[in-house]
Length: 308
Figure 1 (tube, one colour):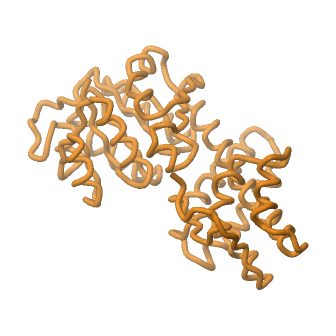
Figure 2 (figure 1 turned 60 degrees about the vertical axis):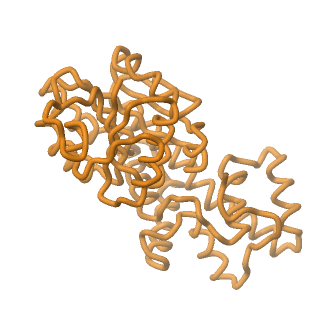
Figure 3 (figure 1 turned 90 degrees about the vertical axis):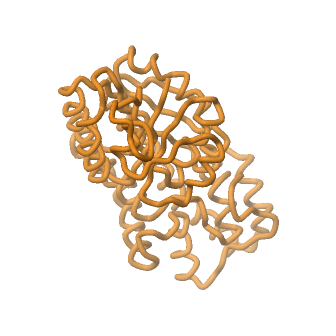
């Protein structure tokens, strides 16, 4: 089965590489050519436009040869723009797999456009971090018809090692937003916990290890906590993306009548982080706000600048 992969950012480039290493035929496109040499070395065909990618190569064969088009893009607006561009050249019976993080209303609205043209749709956002995407071990959250999910399960398994078919379209977008919301809340809380340890006179390396072995640990503490202690903060995820996902979570709260007190407070923290460092700053830099406010850094020896 041949795939087109559009969107080769921090996550998408690794996901496309995993497909290639598993032996799938993959045509790729991104506005930024930074990933071109790496993916071509793995066997990818580079296309200069989304339309050419769907049609089968840099020049386009004109037959809409892709069995499925995967998109991994930064916002609903970009996803919609790309979909509008490629739908006219996708063949009936092909599938669109949306791996971007969208709101449920967005995926349902865009899916309806694709389905009206005879295109199958699967939402498959991922969670776990860029380092797990690089290893082909990221968690995949799929929503859509069981038949479409089964058709692409081998490709999903090439990109991730934990795959959940959550339910119909829209269900994966909800669970993805929930997991991201928890991660950002944990990130702010972990910064406060580490700062309390530092200001209380504890050795930060030992404190981090003790928390990691305790009931207070979290995936965020065990991963992004290391990047905070290193001072790189480099997780490959931006303030803008965090605010987008927190906005989705708060919208879901309104829809379902669920108070979102912690999500709201966390969103306010990230707005302050964006104001201080810019929307493209790394999301763990939210903890840098606390460090600067208290004039106390959270550095410790022995922690990596990047997660491997």
